[in-house]
Length: 375
Image (tube, helix red, strand yellow):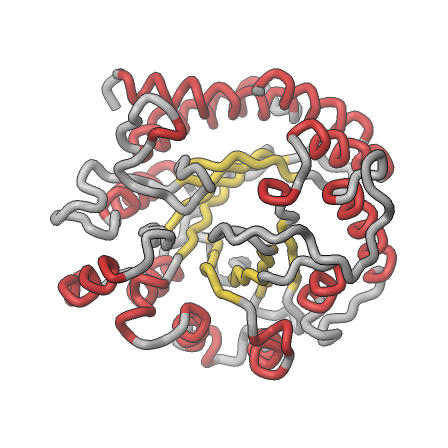
C-alpha cells in the first residue's frame, strides 16, 4: 500500500498501540518485527481509507466496535504460567464497500484471504469456503438481498464478516474468520441461529458424528427461558486443519444479572465441570469490582440487573466453543464494561487487582503500563 494519509492514520492509531502491546507482553524483537511487518503490508491496506479520525469513519459502519473502528486489539492472559498472547481482529473494507459494485463489502476480505495463503503457513480454507458459501450474501441474488438491507433498521450494521489474527510466539500466526449472517438470513426467513446451525450440520464432520455437543446449545435455546431469548450475532471458526479447528457461536442476552450469566454459561446446568464453583466465585468478584465498585456502592446481589441500556451492543455477549470431540461446549463471557463500567480508570484498576489476586502481578503491571502509554 502506498504511503499516504490513510496509511499513516492506521499506523499511528493502531500499529503503534499494537507494537506497545507486544513489547509489554514480552515478545522478542524478531517476533515483534515479523508481526508489525505483516500488519503494515497486509492489514493496513485491508482497512481501506480513513477519514482522518476514528469517530469520523463513516463510509462503512463496521460492527467491529461501537464507534465503527474496523479494528479491535486484545491481550490474552493465561493461567498456566505461559506468556500472554496479543491478538487483533479487523473488518477488511474495500474502496467500493456499500456501493453498487460491492454492497456487502465482500471484495476486501476475499483479496486478503488470497494474500494469507502465502503468508500464513497453517492456513486451511476448507471450512472458510464452506461457511462463506452458506452464510455470506449470495451474489446470485443481490437484488432481493440489497432490498432487504435497505429495509433494515439503521441501527443494524451492514457488516458480514471479520478476520482475526492470534500472534503466537512459538507457532505460526493463527487466522480466524467470523461470519455475521443476518444479510443472508433475512431474505431466507431463517433466524441467524437457525442458518448457522444448518450450515454446521452440512459439514462432513457433523454428518460423520462430530460436534454432538451442539445439541446442548440447541436444546437450551428451545427449552429454557434464558435460552429462548438469546440473540445470535455470529459464527467464528479457526482457519486451520479441521482436526484441530473450533467453531464458536456468539449469542447475546439482554438480561444482565449475574444469575443470568451463570444460567447461560452452564446452559441451564447442562454444562458441569470440576472447578466450576470457585471459577464462578472468582468471576462474581470481578463482576462486583467492575460494575459495583466497593468505594461507591454496596455489594450487589447476584440477581441485580445492570442499569438499562438500549444500545445495539448492550446486554451481555457469550460464545460457545465447539470442537469435534468435546462432549460439552466451552463457554466464554464478555463483560460489557463499555456500556456499564464507570470509567476507564475504574475498569483498569479492577482488572489489574483481579490479576494480582490470581498471581499475575507482573502481567498486571505490564498491562497497566501499556494502557498508560497508549491512552
